[in-house]
Image (tube, rainbow, N blue to C red; front, side, top):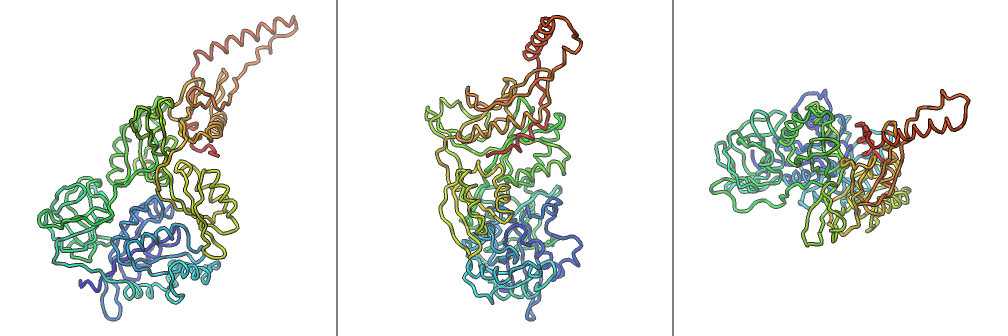
Length: 598
């Protein structure tokens, strides 16, 4: 295929603005599939369809006829959630153009802006499109005005479609052929290909999805991956479709797949460069990064006998998800499990769901934490992402915690609520930008530990669902954080410990102890639930003992008889407290995760 007839493009949008539905209409219009029975054809996971989000990037090749010529359209569908922004950036780097899709009923939102900036950083040609124009509450003029303000384009440049109803789809495909640039690249140069996605196939090993920028790769070529310096032989190469089509070669400007007997997804990392082992290019394509976990949590099987299955299933999950990191961990309360690193809270939730659905293992996750950089008085620097590993405060010189650059887009009437919430979460306001007379963008620098618990839920609550959030790592800053231990009947429960800012330790500790008081059943003795920093108790709740009425059979007689029975009961309770152990139900660990963090 001639390069001038190839278009590599992606669709960028906020969550739920209709990316996957638009992709369905493209597939129908170009006859890749017949009439779509199942919505979101490219969202192959049941979990993706259920949540209405794209978790993995997808790519598909389509043929479109325009002005008597045949065009190859390579669509790379991207995730919209902030946790997967690195995948989005690599997908964008594989394209020359992007469809910027905006829901006409909701307007420009935080991740629309975030992904737009990523696209502009990659010098992509932007094709502005308003979706859902058939909805009764669609504000076509207002949303169009916002797009013009953001992009500096003219109103007539904006295309209007309804992905669900199929309105304006052919015109949009024509515009892709006409307005988005064709790829460039010397097909005779040494090959240089970007890996924009990879996944594990049970029978073929790792399938690598690539975009060729220079040269040609042929079946049987020996290739090298820059990041790992490993070499492989191409067993199969070809074009992307709902079903792969094998070819003898791929040339500059084309996207496709490579199967080369690669054993693990971690060996073929997203963003890496592929070239020939001998006579290949000398420099890798820019932008490669190791995915860095931002949120850490312990994962334990609810039933101890599921541990062996958990070991096997987490290894299988890792084959498909290179950004998941894990190491073995042992907890006195929960037994054997793993300390896992995730890109964010959505990533954690998805891994938990997949573990249960795909491998039928019910698991429990401990309180999420983030990575702290701690300098000890001895001068040693350590990284801590597990409260169990938090050193004695007496040995700590200083602690650095991660701060995020946060953008919140919200209707103007909710500014006060949002500012109050951000202030409660130790946010530092940087600036306020008015997008138009109705919407405003607030920029904050905020500690990640404050975002990961329930910030997103609270944001939606105080803005009645209208606020949208986007955040990216900024830097590490000195902070006064402390480890809070939860003690039940004087014994520390390691799985319930958490790290938080010292100013919030009392409130968080009180909230956890009160939550536990409601879920731990009464015993025959009084149970003290305490939150402590070091040796200092900062919060306490008490579960009173179940008491038998020992005076029920005592009728008449002197008061000393009653006193004697009560004293005897008191002694029994005291002895019971010394030797009795508290049974903590599994619900208590789940309840701790849901405790209010104000």
